[in-house]
Image 1 (cartoon, one colour):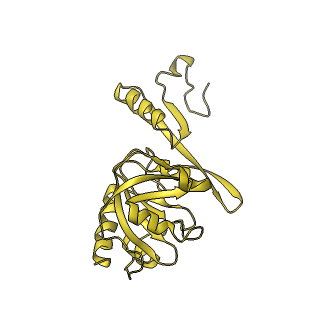
Image 2: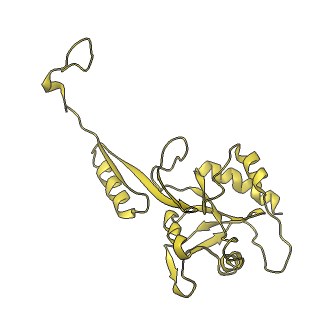
Image 3: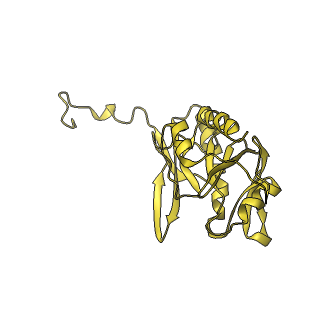
Length: 210
């Protein structure tokens, strides 16, 4: 066996060391914890998470990959620009702000599972921009009456009050601060932000919202 090599490989040279690659859903916290456990025990293993999402009537399958998404492990602290659902319910923004939550509803409510405690969520209101930011403080909770899932937030900036004027950071300014564009059509605006990038955007947002 030589595979075009100058010197052929002996059969005894194969499988001296093996590396295990596990492909699974990014929402499987149990799988992620198991992979991390075995890595801590010295097993050569990596986890490649994937996500399935829908835009319009088309379904998409996507792997988390460098450099487009640095969060191969979704349990690592990250920043997420999260849509307020204006296109389907103009009141969703006030549901989140008044109840100190980040939430999703109906068919897309499962996206809340992509968030983790410690993540920074930047609430993005269509046609305006980022209106506020908060840190995720709870596990996923259900609001059956609203057909929604949510996580509690601790606000890191001021938040809008219904009926009162408020400031926001528009998309052009977000791109300017981060020196990149985002997939604005998604509820979770990919790519996600690293901890350092989240801090950079948060600092700029706090100045903008003053």
